[in-house]
Image 1 (cartoon, rainbow, N blue to C red):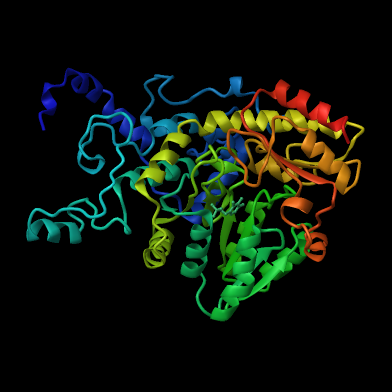
Image 2 (tube, rainbow, N blue to C red):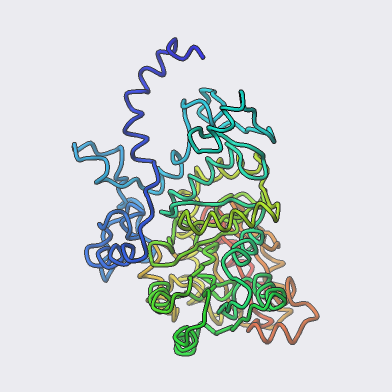
Length: 485
Ligand SMILES: *Cc1c(COP(=O)(O)O)cnc(C)c1O
């Protein structure tokens, strides 16, 4: 390739060593190191090697008055905007910068198909060429980096995996064809026959059913504990004999929050793994691995892809754990298509901007609606009135874009409210650019009274996933719709 003919590359190459150093994923710390990192981060506001969430998000130090949703104007980008001569290792890339640059193989050729395209190429090939047997042997022995077959790995997908690893501060990431595929592969890989999964009662419904009804056929037992009862949770975890603690945080749709540090501490003493479904937070608001969790997974369908147009999942952890999950995933065959991976890479570039806007809208709306006479209750961890606010403040950089509420009416009144909304669309799912609204009594529990009661869903319960429309437009729309109840 006649690369030397490009003056552009000559100019860029002077930047490249620094860029690459900044954006390369570090070895993820051991659990013990993570704990030290967390303690230090708590003490000095996140300066401990990029491990504290507030520091890692490029935000000012955590102080008692610090709002859950910071004024983003105060969040200086640490890397590339400040050239103070400090060694690059001492600086941290902000999530905004990582979302754009991490994982990209600009100009490096080889793995990224040797183009000079700024956008990552979509490599659609399913199989990769070896020049001769020696080339193949070099690949087998790890002396040459390449790919073999599309179900085991793909250059476009690898860029996405490295970007997510950087955002989660993880050693490795596996991207899958859906969030459920990531959940199933993780559970099958990490919980052996005879194992015991402790999960929260309000984890994602299909994950709950898989743990309860399918894993049980593999001699894996399960215990479900209510997050409201931390003592029960602690006593189950403390009994030992737990292979994995599995929980969503925040939960859907009640927006409860798991104290990840606390459960990680309990589990670490007992040798149990901690797996957090962090979908509702997104990697911008929460980084469970830095709080002591072993595994973090997402439905990338939601905030990570962010546009209601692609189904995907991901799971991040140590290289050792991800390679075990990857082996199962190869058998399950849940490979994501390179086209879908590209759409997620594209979506991720704006994730920080989107989520920061969604955080702000949700918090402002929650505060407004909390005091509205036609609203009985608002569920949002960013509200001071939320029982989960204290924990959320300690471990999240923002409360997320989902809020739930109960209108001061019945099933029909809540339907009239939902139907009168002009901007939020009636649909399931969350995390995209369009605001969505749903009434679970209708969307998920129509004709299933018993299930509805068991899951604490009232008829007047409504869930919003705020998008990136202007706050004032959404406010006006919601206020007019409340008049129609
Ligand atoms: C949507 C969702 C899932 C499932 O993800 P899919 O991409 O639909 O397979 C899992 N967990 C949570 C919290 C979700 O919101």
